[in-house]
Image (cartoon, rainbow, N blue to C red):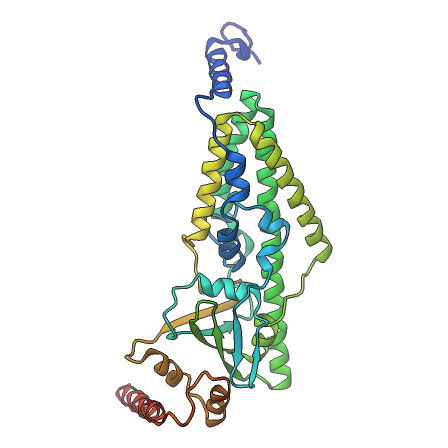
Length: 363
């Protein structure tokens, strides 16, 4: 191309020449060195595993690169975590097969000791489409990554360019893997609810989840959802594509690990800042709606503010005599020989009924 006044190539104009010279200087700028490779490959994996593995969509960080990309390539974000147990009180079933997404989601919630209750519902159809859910995150990811892509090309930092391309691929891989897991969970919940309607089994069951830190969380959910989503791994809708994406994730991680160490210092700093930003947004759940796990699955939290917190948590569960016997058998309730506790428990149940009747009378 040529300027209209002098017909001099734009690439030879003083401004362009000065800009290219500055970019070459930026490429060679290295007043100090950092171990960027160690930072982005070894740190943050566990935190990202918990934050992203809970499947809640982040409106800001969904398309930002993050630390610990290997967490998604090796599918570790779906693995079960030890130390958790689920008690289906209504059906008298106890299992340690608590799916990874649920325990990760619970660990990210603002839980109170024994007094956090969750009610689960399944929407018949998603409330928003793909563009509505992803437009802002896609714009943020593009605006944040595009400058580095352009600068590495203008600087002639080809290792930096490979680094950026690898990051972009890892983001796409992570997005696809999460999409598959969310869609699989949605499909499982939809099937469970549909089967419940067809068979007439639409009962809401009472569930307790014991966390690895000793906290107890009470939940109520449709029986089919407890079986299909809480204790069974959701089926993948496209298993072959999922496997291919994991392979692409490992390839991009390898390229990223090699190219980043060979990139210019500016590229390394930009990469570290960008990945740390995405990781912090994800780990702190900035902008996340924790009640919307997937487009169909909803959870509503209620915290109980009473004196004896654990006892009142059991009172609010409104257990039958049979359910209380099951809880006693599991040692989640005291033995009947502890007459003082059972007397206080009975009085608390009566008090709750009186309070509910007073509220109903006012309304």
